[in-house]
Length: 371
Ligand SMILES: *Cc1c(COP(=O)(O)O)cnc(C)c1O
Image (tube, rainbow, N blue to C red; front, side, top):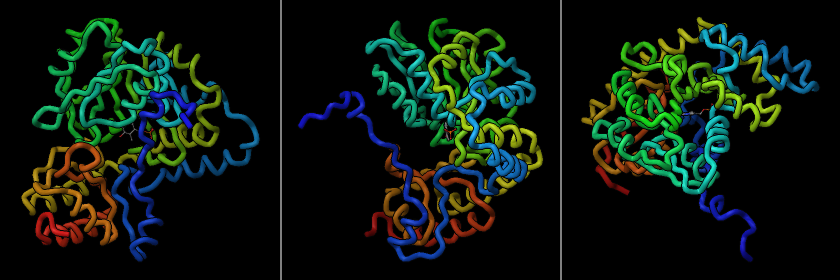
């Protein structure tokens, strides 16, 4: 029987989350499994956010505030941006989908993305549906803004730039982005995905979407509570957008897209500066440990501005990924990202990082391509 589902939807691949810890334990008979594959916060959520969620649980029979008023106010104060430029999402993933819904209006429209970059951008274009234009990263695994500018034509509606990029951890700097935006036709919207903003903010040349929005540019900044703030499980993202685009998103979104517990968690997490500081410190330490582990084996490590490392291990990554898995460590294989000799490893706790260093040594001592 022919499927009644729209052909563009049938052409989509369901998200593959990497193996759940319990499944790996069961299949491989392991008791200890470490997951360094989803860029979550190894320190866990902010204790203040946990307390806020416990309090909010008392009233979870009541619908959430549909406007997210208190959370929007908290974001407005924290980032010094007017409320009408702020949108909330059930994770920034939802905001990516909403951008497709709100901005794409014909099959001839085009969306330009980096390759490899975050896979949810593809989904936003495929759902519309419209044409997805993928532009290879440059030789430094950074967004190639010159090539992306060249890919823009009269059909282009939306450009996604993950900054830092996932999976490579690389950034484009302010000078490069300024030049890209200067030459871009006014009607093209640029979504700057700043999911790892907090980890990159120490770099003086790192651009901030807010500066462009204040300047009246058609730029959207996407932020999330899933990474540095440690709230991935409760699903909470936010965005900064020019008023007209924010208004479009407010019309298109579900009224209760951000649940009451997430709103409470977000407000509390924004106040917990200490947890954020500890997170950034632990990440910087772990980054050194993992970088050294890769470099010891002659791997090319990209300088990462995020909470994960992308390394070219100079041999097929799949057998190494499998060896790590059998030793109880789950990472991301570049195999699935079109980088067959690369691994992406999230920074973990000091203990998890040490475990990775040990099992990676074992995996790399096996002959390349063995098994
Ligand atoms: C993790 C991630 C997100 C998704 O964040 P959620 O808020 O959890 O949906 C968005 N963009 C990039 C580049 C990411 O790595």
